[in-house]
Image (cartoon, rainbow, N blue to C red; front, side, top):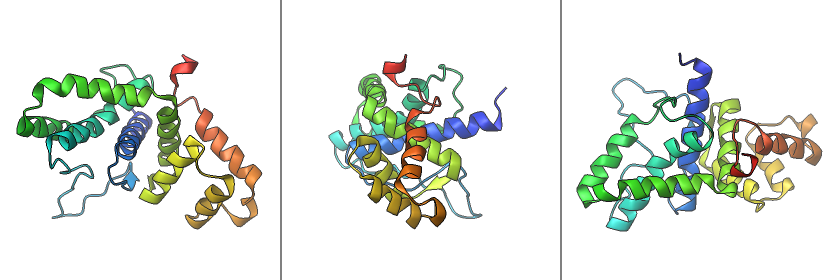
Length: 199
């Protein structure tokens, strides 16, 4: 039986996996949410939708769309046990593949997405983003990119601290580097995500 906690965790991993894939493959970063709100009369639009202007961009698009499920599986969620949070994305994968004649490449695109999610730097970025989503429900595109840079070691503690304060994630009483390091260490060492090196 699927619980609300399962749904939130699976959704956070799914969104984080797609966000990291988009960043690594050069697509525009987007804000993320695990509590989407659909207003009456307003159609929900996938953040991934329609960058497929040529065949290579179509392949990239497919990989990004498949990265969410790949992230869930690499995180240790057994196949068949994942909560389906991306049915629209799977439909879009098949629509893009059909448009560009890439049906026979879907397996290789899925393998590429899985390899990407297994890379240690990507795994760190995914679980940092996923845990922030679980804690905050939504994060901005700017914060998504910052978390990836921090997980990569390309963002300094003071830069990250400034951004956390700017986004209201820390109280001024807690705004010092030792607290930041503790917070980020917890994000990057959580058991939510099992990196390949940890078995």
